[in-house]
Structures are given as structure tokens and as C-alpha cells.
Image 1 (cartoon, rainbow, N blue to C red):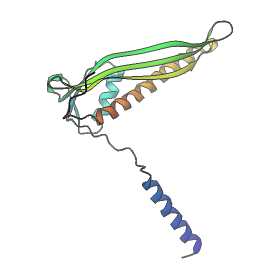
Image 2 (image 1 turned 180 degrees about the vertical axis):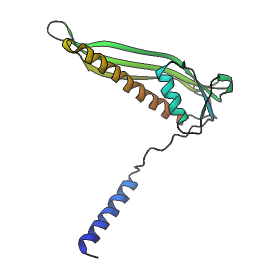
Image 3 (image 1 turned 90 degrees about the vertical axis):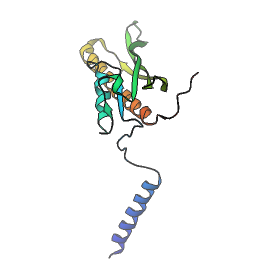
Image 4 (image 1 turned 45 degrees about the horizontal axis):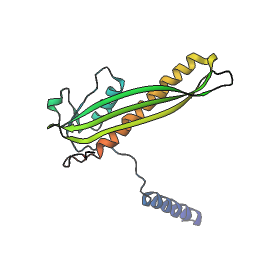
Length: 172
């Protein structure tokens, strides 16, 4: 074995050891502390469809069609999309918008006790605006909202994964 080959092997081993020592790990399947869930969003909701798909993806959690058959119930208390003017140009025309997507939800068990108290997730994105590119900016706005929706689903999934089923939620 040559010195160069030996140094390469040692370098790779040191690199692999340092990566594993820092806590790096690929994100695995989400494991929920419940077996079944009812999602209180209509079937026609894009957010509801994506959330249900992600919940089913782990293969261990059943998404039920009726709240009475579920171990926990995800209630959506409010969902809003807002578009606020962020800045104007020198002629007083809109130059930039702030897109805001808010979702408020809670998680209850079969008995109606809150397992996860009402939680609000708020996401924001900036959208520059040009009058001569209206159609392109409308498409970009729709894309930004879809991106926020996907991020929202991931945040909900992470919050559901750390729920403690044995202890009731704190009340204010």
C-alpha cells in the first residue's frame, strides 16, 4: 500500500468520524405518538390534501375520515393568506408586497382534552412587483404560497411528532 493511498483512507475515515460525531443524520420517517388522526380540513383544501399525504407517508399513522374513529383530532382554528404593501416607488406605485400565510390549529384527544394547545404558525415572503410583468408576478405569488404551504405542513409534522400524549396541554 502506498503512502498516498494510506493518507486518503485515513482522511476519509477522519472525515466520516467527524461527520457522525457532530450529530449529522439524514431525516428519517416521522414517528407520531398516536396511531390515528382526523384532520379538520375539507377534502378540497390543498393544505389538507398535502398534510394528509405527509401523515400517511410514514405508513404507521392512519388518517381517518371521521373524528369519532381517530385517537387525536387536528382542529384548524383559522387559515389566512394576506398580501400587504411593503414599499412604494417614487410615483406611489407598489414596488414590493409581503405575502403572509397564517395557520392556527390545536390537537385534541378523543375525550376532547387539548393535547397541543392552540398554536399559530406564521410564514412571510417578499414579492417584488413590476407593472409590465403582472402575469409572471401572479404566477410567482402562487408559487410562493405553495412553497409556504409545504413549509407549513413540515412544521405541523414536526410539532405533531413531539406531542406528549400522556400529559394534557398547559392552559394560560
